[in-house]
Every structure is written in C-alpha cells, then in structure tokens.
Length: 139
Length: 115
Image (cartoon, rainbow over all chains, first blue to last red; front, side, top):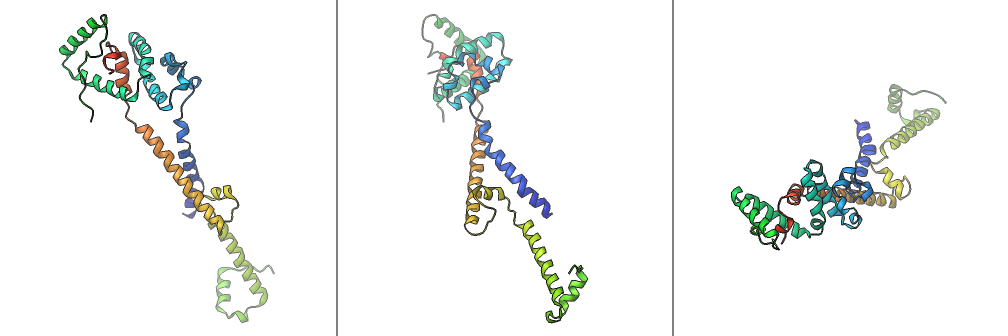
C-alpha cells in the first residue's frame, strides 16, 4: 500500500502537473506552414494575412475549415469568396449575422423563397442590407 | 562483533535491565537501531514534489527550504489550475462554426445578414 501511494506521489502527480501545464501549448496559435493541407486549402484566401490574425480568430477559422471538405464545389467557391470579408467583421457583427440567419430560417419556406427572390432582384440594383427582417433583440 | 539479532533475542534483551546488557550487545543494538532509522528516513522523507524542492536548492526540506518547497507547490498548483481552466474554457466555448459555414455558403450574400 505504501509503495502504491509513494509511486503515485513521486511519478503520477508530477506527470499530471506537466500535462496540465502543457495544455495552453496545445491550444496555441499555429503558423500558416503548420496547418494541414486541408486547412490550407480551405483558408487559402487568408494565407497572406494569417500570421497577423488574432489567435482566437485563427481558432474560429480553423473550426470553419473542418467543414470545408464536405461542401459541394459551388459552396466551396462561395466559402472562398466570402471568407475574407467575413474574417474582417467584428465578433459583434458575427453574432448579429448568426442571429439574423437563425431568425430567417424560422420563417416559413414559401415566405423565405419570396424574400430570396426579392433580394436577388435587388442585388442588381444596389444595397440589399435591409432585405432580411431584423433578428429579435439579443438577451 | 557480528552477532545476528533476531526479534526473539531482541525481546529478551529488552526485558532485561540495561545494566545487565553487555556493552558489545548494546553496541550491536544501537547499530541495528540506527540502521533501521536510516532506512525509515530514506523511505518516508521523499515528498511528492521532491523534484520541485530540488529546483529551488537542496533535498533537505528543513527550515527555510521547507518554506520554499511549500511555496513552489502552491505556485505549481495554481499554475496547473489556471492552465486547466483556460483550456476548458477554450474547449467548451460554444461552437458556432456550423452556422458560420451556413452563412458563408448560403445562396444569399453575407451582406444580407450583416448590419
């Protein structure tokens, strides 16, 4: 019994302490060259500015990149086209956009299609920013 | 004197008065006791964070060094807790990536959703 306790104290506790202390290293920001080929492919529009992005934003973008291989070619193209403007938005703008997207998806499909048609019709004429009704106020 | 002492002879010797014990036997008893104490110290004085003590100086934990050992353990524990909490907060952060990808690949432009 004594040997067991002694063994735990001498080896396991220092081992777990070292493991816990190394956790932030695992979550640390990556350099562009450290990304996997899939991540680089997904985030290629951001390759030039990747190093200057804040660590938290890099982490969020890496999460997006995980979904990239499952997208259709058409959606991959849209993803690439919109990634740069999306990455430049503030966290508040991201939250607001998510709320609006979720709210819009709760609208009945036929009304949603109507709005989409209206937006596509306006797209050629100018701004479309106010086409989707505002999301309910965040609590 | 290389006399071997077993537990029975030790018990018998202890039952006699010390005055009646021959000095070679007393010397042998003292040597056996010291040997046992040294072995006991070696087993019981290695603390869990002995390596932390080694970092701040010597293996002797008496006096000021014991205080160093104590503070090193506290700092290490605090660092572990901070590190684990930080990592857990990061890991448990709400994952919005599915919605983000849906917005980025939607057939409506992102301007529609951005104020």
